[in-house]
Length: 195
Image 1 (spheres, rainbow, N blue to C red):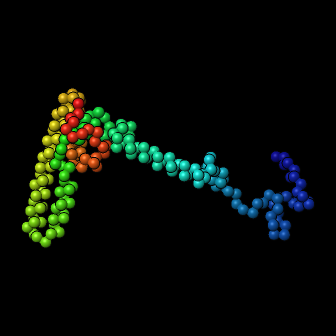
Image 2 (cartoon, rainbow, N blue to C red):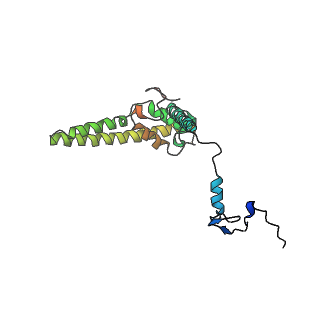
Image 3 (cartoon, rainbow, N blue to C red):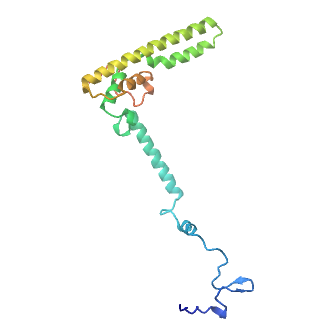
């Protein structure tokens, strides 16, 4: 194979990688050749520089989107609801539950009351408060079962036999939430039964 002549170096110094006075000349670079991964990593740069203003802008957009989703979910907007709350049958079940009074709404205040009564140094009062709480829970479970049956019956009357699975459980769980804590928020007033 023919060799191409080496380019002349300035001052007539040798170009074949020889060392002159302790420094490498010509072809030697004094360090190992970087691997391909190292070369690619050195070339990688973000397409758009991540400036402080861009980060703040992105953070503000995320906060705005999150707030819009929270408000939309509270208002019952289908677009922002989680999968378990979407659909006309779930909306019907929510409206059915929200239109009436339920014992389950009082379960949390009753538990707080029993906890407060347990601090009173009267064993009879503590005992009867716990017994009363268990009796109340029994009635709450009965109310949940009746609501579940009523919602399923009303849904079958409105939507036919194609009712969603878990509709009764969905409505029963909504009865034990205090009205102001429910998400999506109640869209109907008490006594205003859904159509």
